[in-house]
Amino acid sequence: MTQNSTDIVRDMYLEWTANRIKGTPSDLEAWGDVTAEPRGVDYVELDAAGLSAMWAVPKGCDDDRTLLCMHGGGFVGGSIYTHRKLFAHVAKAVGVRALVFEYRLAPEHIHPAQVDDATDVYQWLIEEHEIDPAHVAFAGDSSGSGLAMSVQLRARERGLRLPAAALLMSPWVDMEQAGESYRSNWATETFFYKEVVDGLADTFLGTEGDPTDPLASPIQADLHGLAPLFIQVGGDETLLDDSRALAERAIGAGVETKLEVFAGQQHTFQMAAGRSVEADEAIAMFARWLRPKLGLSAAVAVAVGG
Image (tube, rainbow, N blue to C red; front, top):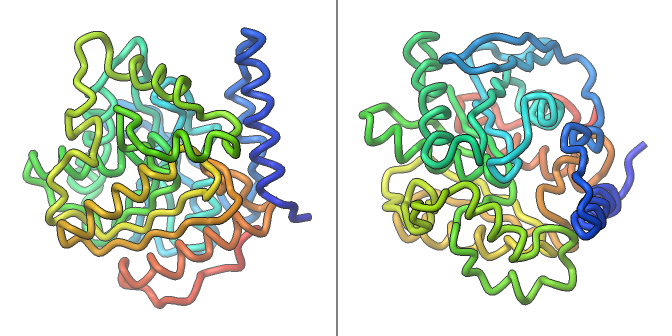
């Protein structure tokens, strides 16, 4: 039964905030509980470029096309298990398989370890698995969306062909937290207040890190030649201006860019996939936009949410 994703995701973040105030750790492994289990998807665990990974393979999908999925978690948490269902919903709607992988986390491993890990997986996919980059799309949420941008920059440095497109959910792409929405949306935010995100940025960068490094803050990068972007963001979240700034920079660099702001929604509200109309509609929009980029018909492969 579908519900309002505002309630599902907001309640989760409110619990995280209450735990933070009390000094009690939140169970991030339970993060994926807000996502419904998609039917008709098989999961296969494997090693990808030396990292733990998982294929999500919807029944009847086009196995010549691949979503390379980068999970969120502020670079300090998240896993293939917290995010497998979210990316499986996206893969099922698009009608392709998804590869979700782990990358090293802070504070044990600071920037650019995460960028290097994710780029290694992309290179492994297109070289060892011989997947045509034109048949690959990146997908990410929050910090994973930042990676989906930074990996393109690192891949460009390595001389690799870039993917066909990137799907970005509430991208975190500014390690200075300079957006006005940290103040204007303070009253509607439920967890990602500036002090929280400042702390995550400090942990990710380490004591010597530079918040203006383009690989850490892609809004500082030269975005010319990068893949087409579809950015989705919640209208109530404090990271709203990250999406706006990224879209402005990308359009200025000649990158095909679509920005969709979902009124009343929280950070990565798509995590409620299969349980809310808003999340399912957002994923269906991703699928309709992405399929032609991968050389497929525009029609969504299956009804989203099942």
